[in-house]
Length: 376
Image (cartoon, rainbow, N blue to C red; front, side, top):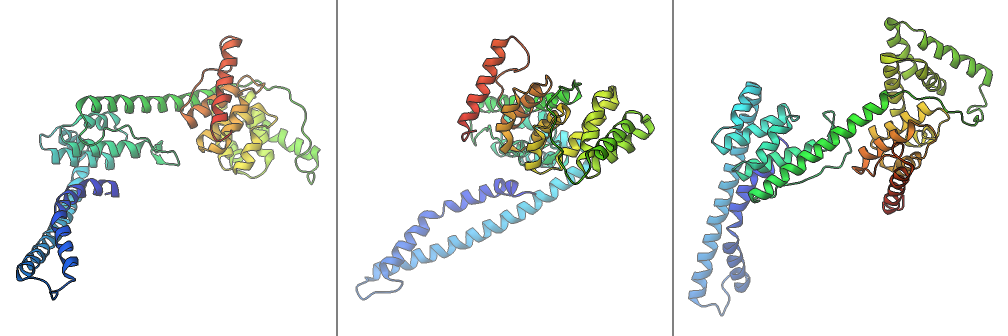
């Protein structure tokens, strides 16, 4: 069980212990007044009052220890109940979520998070539960889920839309709507990235770049690259995975270039697989190398690099993505826009569709937003 769950469970014990404060303060004040013992001017009545307060303080401290021990036992018991409910399976969790006993529903929420945290509807439904401890457990689960992608934790910053403890029914329902809207927006952004990755790109002529590695003869690099490209284009479906694995995993820029050159010559599933391999290849690059790929001469590389920035959640390249909104290749600006939406949760409209005035307004809005973000 994570620390957040233990915090909610321990909260009740903390509240009980806080009630002891007045006695503790009173006893401390009397001890300070008496100097820790019987002073020469202390009256018998004051001595008796001090002794009584000290005795009460000792009793209250013993009570606190008992409460803490009892809370620890309750935590162990709750851990065991959660494990048993997870073992019983999804049906048992579903039934427990609707149980009249709030403690059972709390156990069900914790078991749901441990067994299948992707069940958003069940967690959202618990945000309006009659018991506040159940609502807060569901809220904590959603906060944790907002920091994951495809079931894996990453550097995404978590969000929190409540509801706050003891919030009104109206506030609870508002929190549900906000959580739903946020998760739907994340889903659309991820679908947009996949859609962009599946669209074909027509190569755009760009000025020839100087040789990247003077130690390798340009003729040899071009010959090897053409051979690798042809090998992928001519590969049968049975052999395609083997060729893609080689182009995806081997070191050297020639493999990146060969893979990018092959993509426009492929169709259907073969093209989608090649694009996926190219994006995966770029995810292993450092931020500095990836920034260079954003300005690569091949539009397939530029588009894949933009999508990779979003996948790696590299916020330091947001300014570069905004520049890419004006890329001359038709398919690159939509990729940059999709990446920006994923990283920033902002969207000012399309920079590649609609009339010229709309595109200019969207581009100006992105630039203005970037200027406000730490001088991007």
